[in-house]
Length: 437
Image (tube, rainbow, N blue to C red):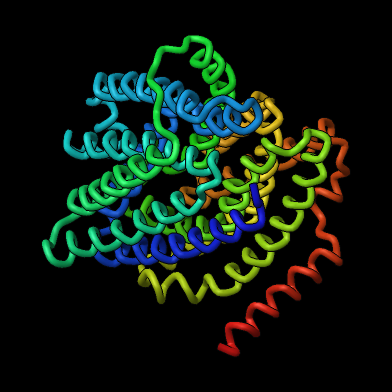
């Protein structure tokens, strides 16, 4: 398992998808009205909750069981798939049973078709996500990378066709995204199964073991997504105008571009840590975290400098109001980076329950601050709530890592001069090679 190779490939793919995602955000901001853009943002947020409610932590369990424990790939996949499908069925049933309340309170009074699309998007992503994890578990990161790029590219093309050629609205855009994701998911499933096969034989022992490991990870991921997206849901529940939610969604969408590096790092780091001796995992994780945090800080500073000019030019003057929440969210993203990367150490070590505990406390803090701040300060209050709660979870995760691994806090957070010099030198050499071509 080559971490450096996998990280580079993931980073390249994530940068491409990030650019395509930014282009999609710009298109939606310019092609949809503020109200429809707000509905689109809420639907996509709801689909994320459906996806993560249904996965039962089986992505992490699949990587852990095949890497650390050594279970046969087809057997581990069969158990994880059964658990995911069972959880997905239950999630969809609950959502459909409460459809009236969801459409009225969360989806701004939208029709049943909007709810169905949100549920379908969540279902597709829940299943596709399991096979993305399988690709990482078997060290076939290129399958996941192709799926990421294809999804972003087809979504952008589909939305452009639906809005420009067909003159549709938010519903047409959502249908285009759903079709794109479903097509890529089918390809990824077929490509992954050719590598591993699938055993659906009843194996109560493996089912129990996967569920036992996956459930704390499931709580961590579900609560984490609730934490990251609760602001948009609470803005809707507290009857903030959809146009204001659209302004906030643009700020969040731009900030999400800073997650390119930590997302790539985390995706490559977990499989690597599961095959490392436990005694080496702490120092390895510490080195990865401090270098990731440094580059995210540099990126955040650069974004903060260009944002006042970027937002009105790229998204339109109506979205100049996104600047304040964006600036508040910049330091919050740095704290989120610390948690996102460090959490892989606890998962790979078989302690996902620690991550879930920290996430639960941070999510409760986020909701409490949001309920106080949104009625008073609107979207700026939502951004402030994220700043407080992300800061808390970053500190709590570092303290827990220090206790479990013995690594000093400064070694985990502060970059070392020799490492930075090596990375900068490597970047210069690659830039020189590109220019010389």
